[in-house]
Amino acid sequence: MARSNSSPVTAPGTATDAVPGRSLALHLFLALRPTQWTKNLVIFAGLLFGKRLFDAPAVVEAVSAFAVFCILTGAVYLVNDIADRESDRLHPLKARRAIASGALPVPVAAGAALALGAVGLAAAYLIGRNFAAVAAAYVVLQILYSSRLKHIVIIDVLTIAIGFVLRAAAGAVAVHVQISHWLLVCTILLALFIGLAKRRHEIVLLAGGATSHRPILGEYSAYLLDQMIGVVTASTLISYVFYTISPETQAKFGRA
Image 1 (cartoon, rainbow, N blue to C red):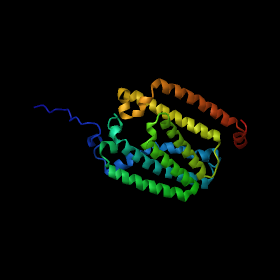
Image 2 (tube, rainbow, N blue to C red):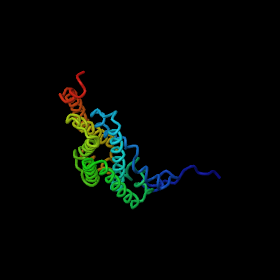
Image 3 (tube, rainbow, N blue to C red):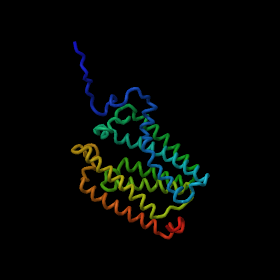
Image 4 (spheres, rainbow, N blue to C red):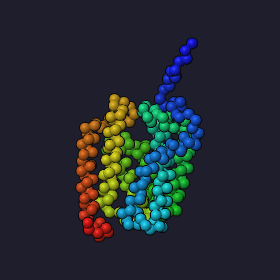
């Protein structure tokens, strides 16, 4: 008798969607989304544009700040995945995330988020009070995003952009340098570009099921996002030009 090669069909979001053989600790680590920690590299902008790249103490402070934000962003991702676990189960890719699939129990994820948040903020305070204040503002903003702001059109992508600005500001505070206002404007515009492009990708990927996964996507259209991306791209280029010709930049780096 021939053996059937077909496997049982399971609904998205069940524990069987998770990769078998992974330990709970590995599921937890992957739920922190370490591949997304590269977004925290913007913290080193203060080190670079503040001309402290070869200052050993400043480098140590910047690396410490980067590590703190990796801890905090990991905690925030856990909170976000807990809040989004029902809608994630309707997504063709996000259904395999540890929390959405059931491989990582919600109580474990919540406890880890609280512990990481406490450790991250305590470490931020050791770096400096001002840095801790910016780090705390980042955490509060991200929690507001996960609970409310991501459901408000335009505000959702603005919140993502402000998160990048807070990272850049935190890096500058950590190494005790000032970042040009124009550079901060470039940062928020670049982050807006990323946020808008992400929304457009979700609309194209999910097509008719976009609103069931993320209701706010119903307020956007590919045409609207294309127009906004075009405006943001032009604004970013103009802002960078103004940054390069500003007296502050020319005094710091010299004329080309």
